[in-house]
Length: 161
Image 1 (cartoon, rainbow, N blue to C red):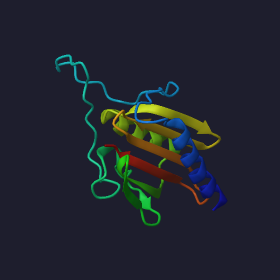
Image 2: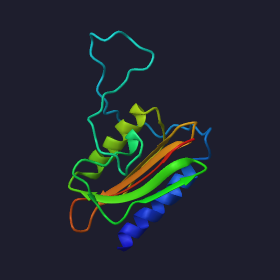
Image 3: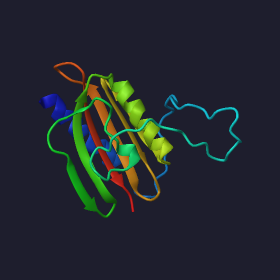
């Protein structure tokens, strides 16, 4: 329980400190890309669209980048709110996937939705990632090994203005 509280507190602190506002476009440290390149037959485009596997929204109406990780088991009731940064939410879940696989899933979805990395962290066994857009859309994910096995994940997002 103490570990989960520490992860939640760390996520909130990092999310708040990493995002100075809608205009903040500070890139995160270089993180390995795990995105499929467009097919060679496709004409070149200024921005290549990445096709993502369909996934269920974390809550009804959540943006594509706030999808529920495949096979996730939701822990507790999601917190959903509508504020100055638009609708958003907070969700905790567990999965059998490794922490890095979970973070990579959300990184691909965020960047495919046009969000830019604003924070990346590896702290011991916990891995965190955050992204945002000038319009105020954000996502933060923290994944760490759970005491009972598997991975404990905290996902928070805002859809922006």
